[in-house]
Amino acid sequence: MTAADPLDCPPDDGTTSARPGRHPWSSWHVAAPAMMVLTALMVWAVLSQRAAVPGVLGAHQLLVLDSAVALAALALVPLLWSRRPVAVVLMLTVLAAISPVATPAATAGTLQIARWFPLRTAVLVTSAGVCAHAVQALWRPPALPLGWWLLCDVAVHAALLGWGAFGQARAQVLRDLRERARRAETERGRALTEARAAERNRIAAEMHDALGHRLSLLAATAGAVEFRPDAPPEQLAAAAGRVRSGAAEALEDLRQLVRLLRDGSDRLAPPPVLTDVRGLVDAARSVGTTVTLDLPDVPTGEGPPPAVATAAYRVVQEGLTNVRRHAPGATVRVTVAARAGEVRITVADDGPPRPESRAPGTGLVGLRERVELLGGTLDADRSTAGFTLDVRIPWR
Image (tube, rainbow, N blue to C red):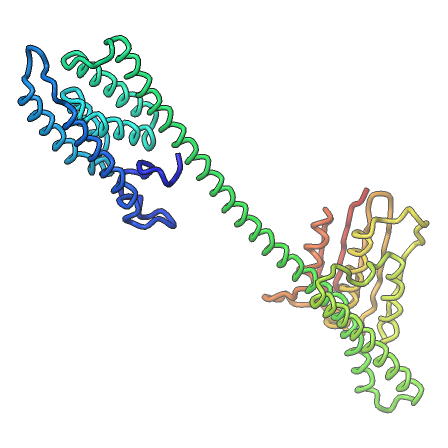
C-alpha cells in the first residue's frame, strides 16, 4: 500500500496533526476521493437492485430499503477517519447484512481497520464482515450458488485483512528505518562533536606542555638578566642567546600547531622518547636550576611504547616547569626508571611548602588524565620537605 492509496490515511486519533511533515487536513484530502468512489458504487448498487425478494419484499419496497441503507452508509463513511472507526465499521457491516449497497463502504471500512489497528481487532472486524455478508446472502440470494458465494466472501475479506496487515507492517518498517537513520545521523553528529572536542583538548595539551615549558625557560632566563644586570658581558650574551633560541623554538612549536589547525592534518612534532629527558634537564640547568638526573640507559628495542615514553617526558617537563614557577632556586632530583612492564618517574624538589590552590592549573589536571588513560597513577605530595611528583605507568 502506498501513500497515494485513497484509504491509506490514519483515523483521526488526535496525533495525526503532530506528525512531522503531515498537514492537519491531509487525511481528509486523501479520504475525499475515496468517499466519491464509494458514493458512486452505492448509487450504482441502488440502481441495479430491481428484482424483488420472493416472499419478503417487493421491488418498490426493496428500492426504498436500499436507498435508505445507501443514505445511512454515506452518512457513516466520513466517520471512518474519526476517533471511533471500529464502531463505524461494525455499523456498516450491519447495514451490509441488510442490503448489498452497503458492501463497498463496509469493505472499505474493513480495510481501514486492518491497515491501522492491531491484528486482533482487525480479525474480529473482518469476521463480523464475513458473517454480515453471509446473512445478506441468506435472505437476498445472490446469482452465485450459496457455497461459492460464501467462499468468495471469505476470500475477499481475507485479502482485505492481508492487504491491510501488509500495509501496516510496511509502514512500521519505514518508520523504523527513518528512526534508525535519524538516530544514526544524531550519533554521527555527536561522534563528530566529541572528536572535535578531543582534538581541541589534544592541541591544548600540546600547547600547554610544549609552549608552557619553553616560555617558562624564557621567563627564568629573563628574570636572571633582570636581577643581575651587572653580570659579566659573556654571561649576559649567553643568556640573550638562550632567550633567542628559546623564542625561536617556541615560535616553531606555535607554527606547527597553527599549521595543524589550518590544514587539518594529524601530524604534530615527532613524539619524544625517554632519552629526550636529558634535553629537558640541560635546558633547566641552563637557566640556573640545579637538577640531578637519574636515567639509566635503555637498550634499543626494549624501551616503553611511544605513548608511555611521551607521557613520561611530559611528566618531567611539567615537574620542571612547576619548580621554576612555584619554587625558583630549589634543587630538583629527577628519576626515571624503566623496568619491564612499568615506568616510574619521580620529580622532587626541596622548595618551600606550596599552599593548596582552590583553582588548580590545567597542567597537573591534564597530566593526570594522560597518565590515567594509560592505566597509570599520579601522586602529588606537598610537604615541608618540598614537592614530589610520583608517577607510575604500566606497559606490556
